[in-house]
Figure 1 (cartoon, rainbow, N blue to C red):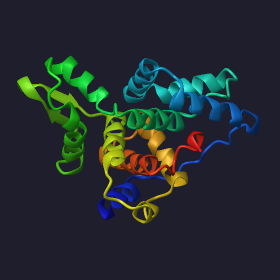
Figure 2: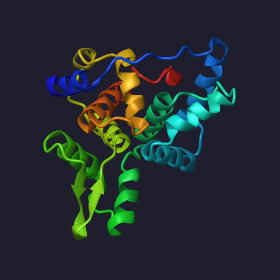
Figure 3: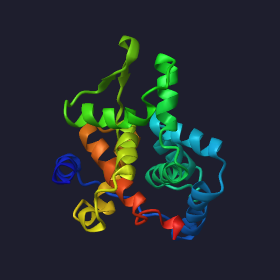
Figure 4: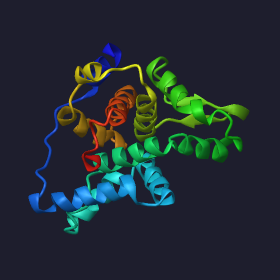
Length: 210
């Protein structure tokens, strides 16, 4: 836990957060609730791919520029998408798709997120070797996704442990940079995702679920 906290504190920089229109808050919550509960698995899977590709932040900003303030920000949307996958037991789905695309074999899909974490945290590299001499490039958004996946599955941390980690107000601007592919510190992006995953698994994060 100290290591995760240290990675985050070293990586995060203070950023201003724009005020959100109060009249759109209810519609944003409704959108997140739909993602969490009623949207089809295929739609949620497609949205997750957008998060990993780094297009969620731009998509939300473009919507706001058009006056569609009911669109959730990218961090809320992507964390809710990942939480839905966690509750559905389908967090491995993305990693299965990655392996099938790159090496035509999904063996090891259930451990690929952990491997990404190991290479990013322990070896501080941005590629993970796969079968057939293929390497998986790790972007900031993929590191965040892998961190969330591992954090969601980590049942060893108590709520008291998690409360010692940086809060969402400090974490969210950094997480947005990760999802926007604008953050170079992959260790920090993985760690941010990990903390979000811990909190989501403990039911202390997604407002739409309350």
